[in-house]
Length: 286
Image (cartoon, rainbow, N blue to C red; front, side, top):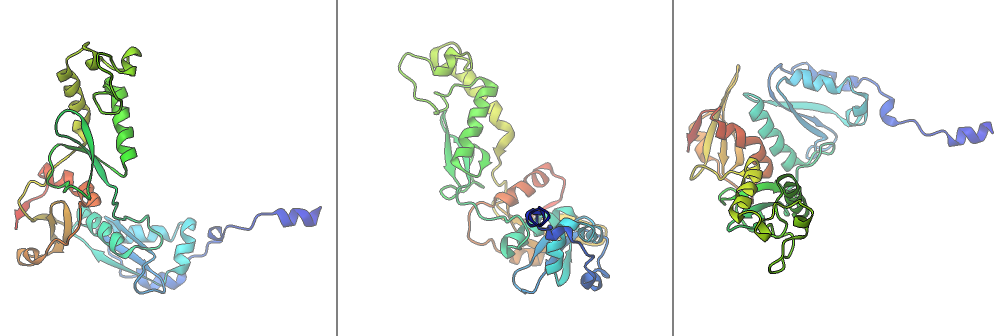
């Protein structure tokens, strides 16, 4: 029985056998207390292990060394490098760019999603449209960014429940002539499909429901420089149609950066929309 119990005992978790990574100590000496992006490198020079960002590089990198759950990554690490930025926005932009281009082993990977879609209202019914077919940075009346058609339709159904919208008028159900939708009999639809309310009222509620996820068109003709001033440096983040091109020190350098061919940058939009539209940063048209 003792032998059988020993055989059934689970193997110890490798991450639980934690030892402080002394071999990395030399790489920590110059870590600054300032914003930036850091990288844990392994044996490969082209494939990093992990990329992260922080408003305090030293504090954040050191926190990895106190986390047994990260023992596997730390054992494979051979050195640590970092790139300082003016502030948190620059760190966010650079981190997202580096993760997408370098695909580090231990990061959640930010891949280009060919199925990225949105809901567009051109007449009355919302239609699912795709970023591969439409430039989302210049297309009006787009609402929400979704990873798939299924996700977009599910969100539309949720809004229908919250705002008593009609599945028929939303294009989610085929209406029969002279009859209301199935949900109207259950009083889950306010009845625009059967004359209980004006269709215009239904449309107003739909737009109200979608307004907080409106996708904003790029408000300039071309690229702009967003100026971020930090305690130790100032950077010009160059943005073109929500696409982050890079960060430079001068306008002359900024004007040389060109937008690569590609579709709508979902991650860039999420990071940049609020800072740019809020007026929180100086904007320089290029």
